[in-house]
Each structure stands twice: as C-alpha cells, then as structure tokens.
Length: 346
Image: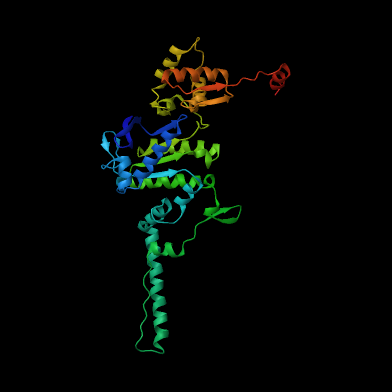
C-alpha cells in the first residue's frame, strides 16, 4: 500500500493507505460529501475561483499519492453517482469513453483502408458531377472534400441499444443494462493509455441493483489488479451487500466525528477479542459479515434499531475502541413459541 493524502479543506488532509480501492462507510455523511466534493472539483483540472480558494487555499487542491503531488491533467477521474453517469460515457461526445474508443479506430489498418476506398468513390462521384456541370457551364467547377473518419462519425453515427430485436436510444437504458459496455471501455482506455484512472462510486444503491453492484466491484477489482493503473473509491450511506473477505478490512475507512482506516484483519480481530465481554467465538467469515452489517452505525445516533444481538455487542465494542460517542438504541421483540416454531418449519 502507498500513502494517500487528500485535502478536504485548506491545509486539512485525510491520510490513508491505498492499494487499489477503499470503502468509505460510517454514519457521518458530512465527511463523504467533503471527500466527493474535493475529488469532483479536482477532476475538473482547472484553476480555482477566488471563492473556491477560500475553501482550499491559493495552492489549489492538493492530493498526494505515494509521496507525489498529483496533477489532474495527468490522470482521469470518473464519477458514477446516478443513472446518467454510465450512459453519458457511452454517448458519442468529446472526452467520453465511447468517443475515445471510436476515435482510436482511425489508427486501425482496416478502417484506414476502408476510408481510402470511400474517398476514391468520392473522387469518382466528383468526376460524374463535374461532367454533368460541364454540359451547361465552362466556368463552374465542383469539388467534393474527402471524408475524415471522425467527421464521418460525428455526422452519421447513431448509437442504439438492441434488446429482443427492438431498437432503443441509449438514453432510455438504465445503468445496469449498460454496465458491461462501460467496464469494457474503461479497461480498453487504461490499456490504451496506461494512465492513472480513478473511479468514484457514490451511493451506487441509488442507480444499480445489488447484483450489479457486486458484479461491478468484482470487475473493477480485476482491472485494478491486472493493470495497476486503476484506483476506485466506494462511498455509500450504508455498507453495501457484497461478499466481503478479510482482505477488505484494511481497505475500509470509518467516518464518524473523526475518521479511521481499519488495520489488517489480524490486528482488527485481536483488538475485538481483547475488548470483547465474553470469550470470542466468531470465526473469520462471521466476524467480517457481522462487522459490515453494523459499520454504517458508527458515528450515527439512532433509536429503535432492529439488529442481531451479537451484532449489537460487536458494534458497542467497535464504538468503544473508536471512542465514538454516538448513541444507538435497539429494540428487541421476543418471538412467541408459535412464531419460533413457524420459522423452524420454514
């Protein structure tokens, strides 16, 4: 892992360890908003206005990775935060993933050969028109300009989504339906440019189904591992339903009055065991699952929460370790014997 420092206000930094991805969980959404605000403004790669300088200072937004000050002009940052985020990258507009992918085809041998043939046909057409004009004028000449590949796409390309033999505008499709194409284009861009790329996934439950969030996470993880160029950040108001493993623990940042990146799983488990009120009996999988069920309650005051009693014990241990003073009150509703039997027979 390398040190990652992000300035969220003038001279104020969050310092973390970053390898390929980070989860930002916990009940303090003000932290999430500041982090997203900083990353988004940084991605514009433009000088700050005078008003923005009052927030970030005259030096602009400073983000460091592995001891180096990052320049937004030398990297790419994508935000996935609503249903238009994915679609917008598949539209044929300048600086989108689709535009850059199709633009790269102009260097393709087959495309170049075909454009030569098209322009030869244009010359033949120009000759035919010139002969026709020559029948009634000795002074007027006509010329047809050769076609440029990108101009051809701009003027004549129509992108559509085909489903069950029906054609749909891409703008009609939701993010889940366009996810495969987005993933392919991200991977292709990184391999083509070998340029550091960040993806900020903000509250994905708002625009992606659970199975698609899990799929996207797995694909981004594979691309990050394979290319070493991709870093991605997941910020959500509650812990996502994913197949977490022990490797995710030290990639999780808890946001409360303060912030805390968790240590390695071994140290995390030892800390829980030392402070647990009874003999600790959860195995690795149970501890990981329990933690991600309760971590969104760190830094949040709530009443009448229905939560597994074992999870509640872990949550209280976590709050004490983090010195998180937010209060959680749970409501336990015992089952009758008939209700218990009903569930046993399920």
